[in-house]
Amino acid sequence: MTTDQPAALAAPLPAPRSAPAGPAAPGPGPAPRGGFLAKAFGVTAVLSAAGSGLGLLRDLLLARYFGASQGTDAFLVAWTVPETAAPLLIEDAMSFLMVPAFALALVLREEDPDAPDPVRHLVRATLPWLLLALSGLALAAALGAPQLVEVLAPGLPDPGLAVACTRITAITVLPFGVAGYLAAALRAHHSFTAPAGIYVAYNLGILALLFGFHGVLGVRSAALGVALGSLLMAGLLVGPFLRHLRAGQPATGRTRRSRTTLVLMPLALLPVAAFTLTRQSQVFAERYLGSALPPGTISHLNYAAKVSQLAMTAGILICTVTFPLVARALAAGDLTAARDRVEKDLGQAAAVVLLGTAFLMACAPSVVSLLFERGAFGPGDTAATAAVIRVYSFGLPAQALIGVMIRPYFSLRPVVRRADDPRRVDGGRRLLDWYPVAVMLLGLAVTVSVGLLATPRFGALGLAAGNAAGITTTAGLLLYGLVLRGIPLRLRRVLGGHGRLVGAAAGATALGTAVADLSVDPLLSTLAGGLAVVLAFAALGAGLGAQEVRVPVLAAGRVLGFRGNPPTVADEGKLPDGE
Image 1 (cartoon, rainbow, N blue to C red):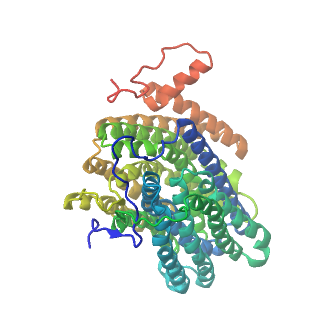
Image 2: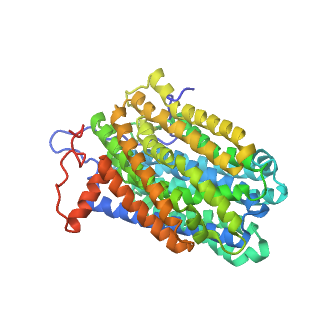
């Protein structure tokens, strides 16, 4: 079976009726207004930031209670299960499959209101099978915990603790999948608040057990908190989902059969799932190689990654907001508009992430000291974690750019359609579905190769260097892949703009490091170094002609009362070629 062979749902779904003569048949409701979307994005951003803040507090408590030790290494190996399940079941794969499916079912409901509710039929046809599959995966992960730990971290001195924690965290597979399914349904119904709050509930569950039972259960309290948090995630969404499902309950006496079926393309999910798992394999490789290093190494890598990813997340929020614009342009066949939006997203995300990268490189020691150095986390842990952050940061721009590029790439491949849709996918386009997986595998090979060569001499820094080299390789190849996919990016223009931003970030890093080193107080060093980085990045970026920096700098100058030449239309990126 190939990826273009559909699997029809067991329950038939109604097709829209042909329009009768006279008044037009009812169609899908109007698109949400800009004010509604702005409010939805605002709520999502606030709740996402709250979830990230609670996640940081979770990491701070882990560092305070357990430091960087064999116990935290064991927990972080067990953490691999939810860390892998979350992007696969909540974010990427589940979202790519179920959001379009529920959206099309809602359109059919609005176009043919007298037929049985297609949303309810979709749920009946998919949810029981999903629950069965997720239960089987959770059971398999729990039973295979010893083998899983041996594969992920064969050098752990105490694998028994890691096995116990892995069996606890295996529970998360089922509620994670349910949460991803319900969140996709709610977003398709234009309900964003509850899905945006799932990570707040998740981290609150972890914090509750970690704070209350760390003295009795040790690091197992964190594993139990992960399981509790996953249950809270799913529970948060059940009520809103049922309310929306009841809203489409058919009226008494509806017996007319539908005229067509809604067809899912389940094999189109395979490239998305494979890409997600392959990307997550970089973490597996790090922990595998890190398990043979001194105790605490995996923990240093984890703390460094969590701090570094805050800068990357800020850049990803840009494409999260603009992705519907790209998807709509691609659906309409307007590749020029899609190209312009993707190019602008690439530039803006790079500017935000490079600013954060410059800050982390300049102020890493003071930031780590300010956040983590207390309790069992000592000065040696601070120095080791800060060094890893500085090396990790070289790969942050590539991480963010992959997040920007992969959304439009997979949007060009439909995962749901009507049964009577005449479109077919030829062999060449089908092979391009797997291009991101291939380049991610190549990047993983670079990660492992650099790690094997550098780890014996440089330890954790060698692993971080391998991560940065591998993900940068993948980003470069995926940029070219967007062109192959059919989005005609102007690569010279994109790379030229990024080169100017990199130059500004390099200068800001040098100045910020010099300023941060003037003070031994972590708070003062962080504030002074951060201010120097921001000012230097703004000045150098504007001077080098980076429009992603120059336009906001000029706007800020006008707000503060400085006179100057206003930005041109080209500065604001409103012309396709900026000319």
